[in-house]
Image (cartoon, rainbow over all chains, first blue to last red; front, side, top):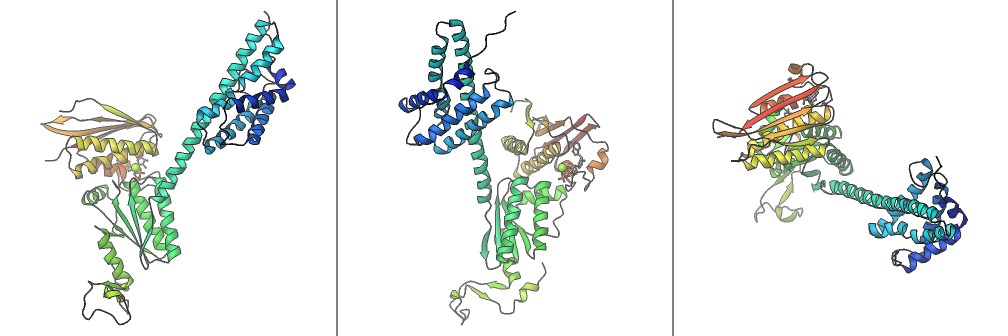
Length: 313
Length: 137
Ligand SMILES: Nc1ncnc2c1ncn2[C@@H]1O[C@H](COP(=O)(O)OP(=O)(O)OP(=O)(O)O)[C@@H](O)[C@H]1O
Ligand SMILES: [Mg+2]
């Protein structure tokens, strides 16, 4: 049994590193493989040089499989390059071309090195093709991964955006919840609300669940925890927007909301909030309600004694 | 009438549970469930689906049928997992009983939200729960 002839790729990479870099750069710049409007030539040169260096290191072992730890650094480099190119606006195909465009320079050197040894040449052309194809495909994979990361990040941003805590009145916060409340999202919501309670020193927070499709025991537990935490920070919560079908399921589930103030609508909740913070609201009239201290049109007048604040509901 | 074909969905993540809820809701709307009935069956499904993730070994399946009985149509859901099973079903159904820091209301609550509730479980083998809610008058 004869041993398989040894690949000369590592040797060639070693020997012609400088020439390969030059050829490869030329290949990319003339072949329009790199949209030069997206990146500088010097940056490209650095990436290519580093790629060659790590490829040379890695191919000292086997060039046909890329499983060994000697390939890790090269893979990391590709992942970094792919990431930065994705941000720069390269398409996956353009990024993969970065790797594929190295075929021509490498093939040329192999042909030179093997001369008339056709068997040797075809073996190593095959090896080189396999190797660069695999590396090129890796960039596509990294590209995909990069996109997914972006999507996850956007979802997280959206999650915060979609749960704005609004300061609707002096001392009154409102949190209109919309959509499905999974654990992760509720976590964000809860933290935002508690932070705003601290920042604003609000005494009342209205959590409106009109836009929440169902309240199961998990959502109920999150709501109860939020109410309890807010209470520890000195704020009372009112849960509003409990639709009839939700009220029924909450009762069937056996969730105990009797320690929580609940209201059918946001406006019901708001009027309780006004009472508690000592405001009275009345319709703007032309008569005696116009106050002397310049309150706008008498729409709201602060009751001096704040007697309502002690009322227990 | 709708074909009586069993549909199924794999449950592995909380996203799957959300998907399942939308699926059950769509079927309930499709056969003319009232808003209250829709909400009840979807909420019960949410409880049992989450239980599979939290207590039933983290994955399982849910099967959906649209059975008819005495010319009434309903939704039947079967939740199956190959998790640790429930040793004492009576206890698990008790309000407030939890082994996982929940409210302990999911199982009992789901039973109260539907018309029929069957549970079969064996320690070490898994759990199967079938719930049915008939369309109201
Ligand atoms: N599929 C299952 N496999 C194994 N054990 C289960 C399963 N479903 C429920 N259990 C057990 O039954 C207990 C009660 O379940 P139940 O859904 O009522 O409460 P919980 O999930 O703990 O809290 P929650 O009120 O949030 O639902 C669980 O704590 C768990 O020990
Ligand atoms: Mg549960």
